[in-house]
Image 1: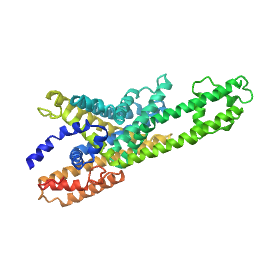
Image 2: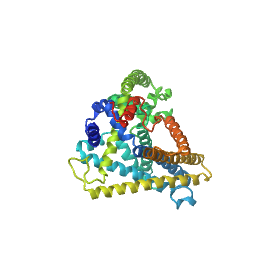
Image 3: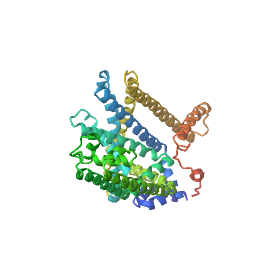
Image 4: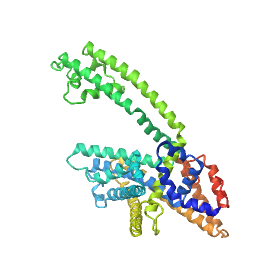
Length: 470
C-alpha cells in the first residue's frame, strides 16, 4: 500500500500540468474533488511553500507602498527618494526595484517552465488576466521608476497612474489565493466584465448616437455661431475636441444632470428626454439585471473558483520547482531537456535574487523609519507609519513561522525531548499566527481558507498513522 502511495505522490509533478491543461469549467470542477483538494493541500501546506506564498503577498504590499511614497515624494520634493538628505541612500529606488526584480524573475521562470512542459500551458498562462497583471505591473514599475521628470508629462502621468492600478490589482490577485470570500468577489468581477462586454459596446454606441444628435441640433440651429447668450454652456456642444460632447452625455448618464445644457431649444429637450429614458431607465436597469445574474452564477461556483486559483498556484509552483531542480533528471519536463548545470545555475540565481528581495524589504523598512522624521506632508508620514507597521508584522510573522517550523521538526525527530518551556513559547507564537490568519480570513492551521477540508485534515492524520481515507 505504501509503495503505491509513494508512487502516487511521485507523480504529483505531472498531475498539475495535466490538470491545468484542461482549463475552463473542467478545471474548476476537478479542483473541488476530494482527491484534488488533497493533492493541492499536499503541495501548498509545506512550510517552505506557504512561507514563499506569504512572502510574495507581503512583497506586493511593500511594492505598492513604496511606489505610493515615491509619488508623494515627487509631488513634495521633486524626487522619488524624498528630501535631499535621503537621496543618496535611494531607499525607495533600491527597495522597490529589488522587490520588482524578484517578482519579475519569478514570473519569467514560471512562463519558461510551463512553455517547456507544453506550449498549450505557456499560451494559456498569458490568457489569464491576473498573470498578465503580475508581469505588467512589475515591468512598468521597473521601466518607469526614473521617468517622472521627463518632458512627456501626459505620457508619464498615464503610465504612473496605470502602474498604480496594476499594483493594486496585483495585490488583490495575491490575496485571492489566501481568502476564498475575496476570491469570489474578484472572480465575480471578472465574470461580470465578460458577461457585459457586448452590452457595454451597445451602451457606448447609444451614448455616441445621442451625442451626435445633440451636436446636430446645435449646429443646425446656428447655436455655435451665436454663442453670446450662453458661451459656457454651448461651448461644450460646439467644442472642436473630438469627445467633448460625449463626456457631457456620459456625465448625464452617471447622474451629473445639468438641465441648463439642454434648454436651448425644444429639439435639445427632446434629445435629453429620449437619452435619459433609453439609456438610464432602460439600459442601466438591464445592466443591473445582467450583473445580478452573473454574480449569482459566480456565487454558486465559489468553491470551484477558489479551487481553481489554488490549483493554478500549485501548478506554477511545481513548474518552478522542477525547472530549478538540481536532480540529475527533472521529472516535470517530458518533451524537453534542461541541462542539470543550467538548472543549478538558475536555482542559485533565483535564491540570490530572493535574498536580495528580502534585503530590499528590510532596507526599505529602515528607510520608512527615517521618513517618520520628515516634516511637511501628512500623507508621507501616514504612509511611512503604515510601512513600518507592515514591516514589523512581516518580520514578526517570518520569525514566528520559522521558529514553529524548526520546533515541529525537532519534536518529530526527538519525541522524548523535554522542551516544556520552549513549547510554551512556541504555543504563544502559534496563537499569534492563528489570530493573524483569522484576521485576514485564513484558516488557523497554516492552510488556506477552506472550511470544507476538515475531512481531508483527518485524512492527513490517518495517512501519517499508516492509512489514507480519501
